Image (cartoon, rainbow, N blue to C red; front, side, top):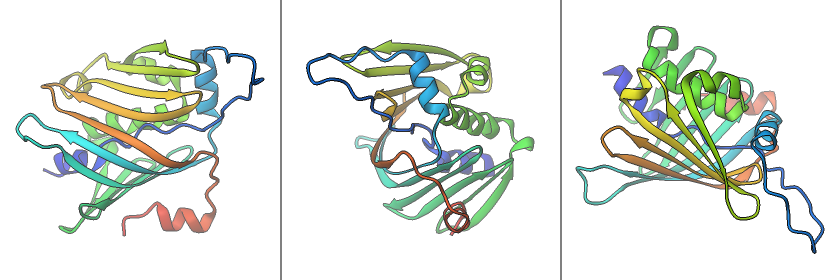
Amino acid sequence: MRVLRSLVFLGCLVGLAPEAVQAAAPSTAPAKITRAELVSALQAVPGVKARYKEERRLALLAAPLLSEGTIHFAPPGKLARHQTKPSRASVVVDGKRLRFGDDVGKDEIDLAANPVVAVFVDSFLQVLAGDVSALEHSYKIEFSNGEGRSWTLTLRPKAEPMTKIVERIVLRGSDAVVRELEVWEVGGDSTLTTFLDVDVAHTYTATEIADVFKVP
């Protein structure tokens, strides 16, 4: 039960990248972004904070479940998601511990003892850090260009336990900015997360780290 509850809180922690829009002459069409350029931008992130809006679509429900809140990342391994609507809930990852809480109470998980949750957490951190080598051990990575500097990155799990839970993870953006994250689960349920007001060059102070990366 603790593992299932923690996975619900995890939701879609992944999906933010540093915003490094490259300047181009007004009369010159920008060259299409390459996978290498995107990876370099991800690896350069000093810290991220943003608002998010999430839409979770379940086959058993006629209307999607909506939520919103804030998300924070401080490399190499601090990650926090604080839901503010429709109710308050938080999940914080710091090293090998995952803490979460809501109106029901608080709990903590040792990731080393929970491989399913650990795979989720490690994958999210690897995307945020642009650790392609680590990602390629767990996912088939598909990169495609769109109009201008836009791109789509699709991650398909290679092995269990992820293949039993997630069918694919799709990130969409332009330059090094991720605009949307969509997670498709085995069975057809999906979650779409849109990121807003992204501060892509945020360096967390010691005071902020103490305040943000905790379960209230």
